Length: 256
Image (cartoon, rainbow, N blue to C red; front, side, top):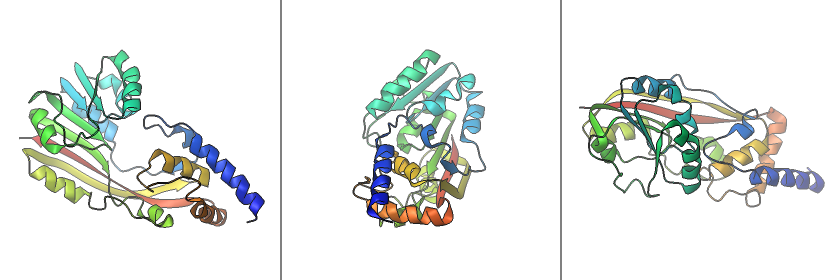
């Protein structure tokens, strides 16, 4: 690849890097990033658990887009928390018209007490966000449920290797979270893990993805990782797409 071609790619990728990202919305690259889906549906499972519930908490709602997709199943009271100020503002705009109370929490939510009373919720749901299991247990009513879908800490290990880095939390697995939950009054009633593929049709889509999720490749920018991106461009010209391994797990637990 000559200098002119690399300069054109650099400018293209810089443009992708500058595209806005809000909430947890990847619609900008929806046609260019294809992700296989696990055998479960987090949304359907949460909706079914909402049916007999009177009070539900969505812990770490992001921009509220996933919770909003369940609006037809909302019970009498729905509360959502978010600790990232831009996402909090976005979630409040989206969810408040549907009667959802959106609460801004501390950024260090793992160490903070949640601003809710003991035994306040029938259901706590949590998708791809941190949680303090002791606090979840405290605010759940007896026989209440906790549902969480998480990204395995070893996910996209092969992607990290292409940028000469490693996953930051490789210990964070289904077994790890299962054992953490076992130390509480919660009883795990369902636990599943899954491994599948995620495909990028062009390097620009990957640039946007890495900009949106900065902990995958710490310090990622087009400037600092340009040589790595060029190698991936050469690969995509040979293989037509970039393929990496994603890992997720789902846990449903009930308070004894």
